[in-house]
Length: 165
Image 1 (cartoon, rainbow, N blue to C red):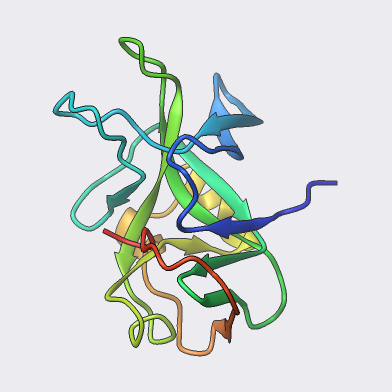
Image 2: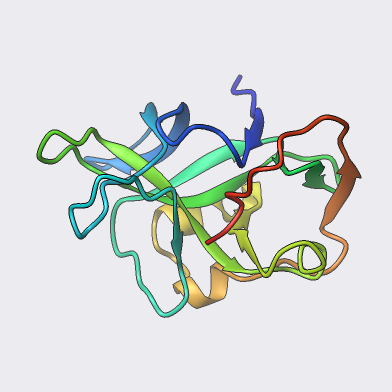
């Protein structure tokens, strides 16, 4: 049985994490580092990608999580379930390893008081629709309704923001 874990928004860009993807027709779990090679070839990894106005016809992935933490706050689904972040992955290229990034969207009502962007969250019943491209991006990569997240203050959490770009 897979156990989702806490996602730290300030995790190092090369932190390895299990993702779920469709590859060569099969759904597989694989551990990849967080951070894609920048398209401009620069040295700094890209950990989040804006989703608006873009399509992702291939290389989609899911990043399972039980909650995510940003600064001194913890966010989990109000119903207590775990969830996925919608992501993309890229094959290894020119000394850059196979890696993934998480897609961002406009902040939901629960996140907007804290930040204007958030990582795209999918529920378990949306996972295959995302992996298989069954729903257009603008219909699945959207802020969830108010009350979706339970927000708790955490003591002693790091204050670096990588929740959204």
